[in-house]
Amino acid sequence: MADSSAHFEAAMKRLFDVKDNVAVVTGAASGLGFAMAEIMAECGAHVVLTDVQKAALESAGEQLRNRGLSVRTMELDVANREQVQDVFQAIEQACGRVDAVFANAGIGTGGNLWSREGKLESFSDDVWKKVMSINLDGVFWTMQAAARIMRPRRRGSIIVTASTAGLRSEPIVGYAYAAAKAAVVNLVRQAALDLAPFGVRVNGIAPGPFRTNIGGPGPRPPQVVEAFTRTVPLGRWGEPHEMHGLALFLASPASSFVTGGVYVIDGGAMALSQCYSHELTEERWSR
Ligand SMILES: NC(=O)c1ccc[n+]([C@@H]2O[C@H](COP(=O)([O-])OP(=O)(O)OC[C@H]3O[C@@H](n4cnc5c(N)ncnc54)[C@H](O)[C@@H]3O)[C@@H](O)[C@H]2O)c1
Image 1 (cartoon, protein in one colour):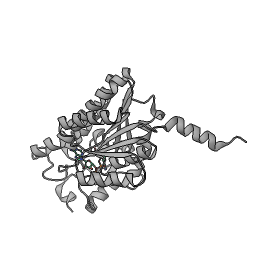
Image 2 (tube, protein in one colour):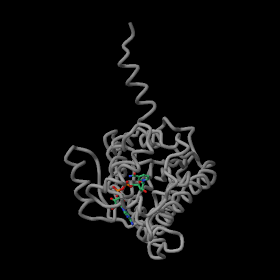
Image 3 (cartoon, helix red, strand yellow):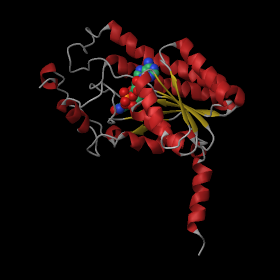
Image 4 (cartoon, helix red, strand yellow):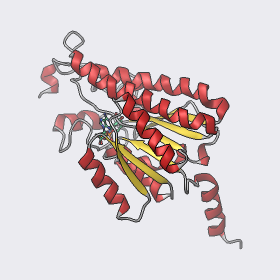
């Protein structure tokens, strides 16, 4: 009988070989970004973790470095256009190449439809601008910086973290979040067309509820946990490490014919057509 483990190893190498690739992750100090950085580093890539939170970033980098993984950290606020350009230029100079960019940084600030401040008439301009500057402008500038490096080299994979809230209406998120996430879904498609002739692939990931620090660290109010959990057929929130497979797939040769897509990872939430109660009252939300 043939040695099946040799075939397995050869197949895994053919599909998922990212060894010595250079990957950059924004918002890598926590949650899904950390998981993306972790799996790429575990598979032999050199990973640049970037984040706006310096202390959390250093501790995330140290955690991976202590495991012998090849990582470096660079402070980066994706809402600062010049900083995004400078950091990516510095990475290209230092590493000589960039193969995968995860435009992942995002915030979940802003009242939802069940709160008074989340209603259309009262949604704050400041919150709108803040969320847009990180979740939309920041993603756009990250994609631009990636394209500047990848287009002339005719290789690369850009992976954008969108949300199921960008693919359908979700009263549980705020206006700005919903609008920004819908916008990045189309940014992915537009950039995929633009960069396809140069062999650069662009895809999105649309997570459902994952247990991360979004919305703030520490335990969430029980009504938030319950409201989200009820929307997930698998009956629970995702854990960040459950992002490993999809993140690696989109960055690796396994997805060589995949571009312009947005891939849902949500425990089945998008398969439910009626997921939230229609009783959108503040009383119900703050019960
Ligand atoms: N967790 C979920 O349920 C969920 C669902 C759908 C989409 N998402 C998306 O996943 C992405 C990652 O979020 P997460 O859930 O891991 O949250 P998280 O809060 O655990 O991690 C987000 C990281 O982004 C960083 N960040 C925030 N603003 C930044 C800025 N201006 N520049 C650089 N970094 C910045 C934070 O410091 C943090 O480390 C976000 O785009 C979020 O919208 C999350």
